[in-house]
Length: 398
Ligand code: PLP
Image (cartoon, rainbow, N blue to C red; front, side, top):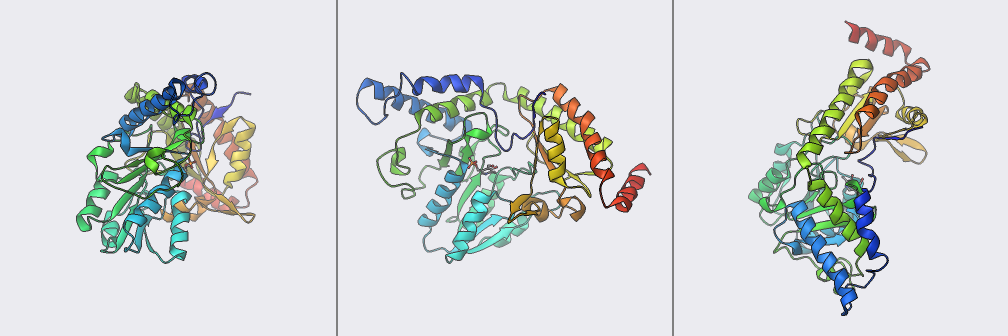
């Protein structure tokens, strides 16, 4: 059975040339970048070259604005804690209700430790309410954390405009943007924005898991996040993961190559999948309606059916996708993102995210469009909501 991988917002396959780029740094080029002999210089230079590449990838101004970390979660923690250390006397923090848990759970912890948090909402298309954001900024707002692209719906938030708005109201408020789902899907140009911190994660754009980066704007000075040696400008001590840093830079280079062409192909296939499902499955509704959306993501709600069951049936066909539900204490909790955008309750537990990559093929999409309606029909047959489903079907036919 052929694997059809449509879960690229969860993680991606590592590019072949990315694997090849890092291999020498495990074997013949294994030196510690901090040592003084030639072998060490090779590692040191490789890191600096990688920093230059990630600078270009994120649209930073100078390489020193890039700090290598272990993942997107660590980058978010470093940015948020760093910003709060700068604005020590300000105890108000702002974010959206649809952020990744690496931000939301940290905010929860901060609230337990004396911070007051405001969560800005989204409309039914998943777009941020900028008036609500404006109203949220105060003189004691230390930090605004707003993601660039949502992992579940793909909705893009205008971070340049958001940073502009924030700084106009309070120039001291720092702005962090979780760009993990934007990297490789949208061109980033952070130097043209007032965003102070931005995070990326290698495994979302065909580098290995366990490597990320944090952009810290020049002139923004945070205290060390990990204390120890002098590595990463003393902000994140610990011997650098040279092979993975090299790998992430190679993956970034790959992303930048023929970017527009690759994005056009992914968009075409995503739209084909989206229309193919919506046209052929009567209980399907589109959850990812934002006017601005990353090209690889579509989130579809199948009303009156269970998302986990859909995933199990799809798995039997070799298709990997994901639902936004989280398993907490044995219960399936509907996605906080879909709840925030008021997705109809009939679709909350039957929502599936399909996320494509440059490796997705037309044949794969055709296979899913052909087989997914059969899967849904099979589940509908055993649904206890026959009356409601009949009504939906009649509505669709009229
Ligand atoms: N932020 C977003 C929007 C994500 O989608 C993810 C991963 O799913 C992360 C942060 C966390 O990244 P990492 O897995 O590298 O910690």
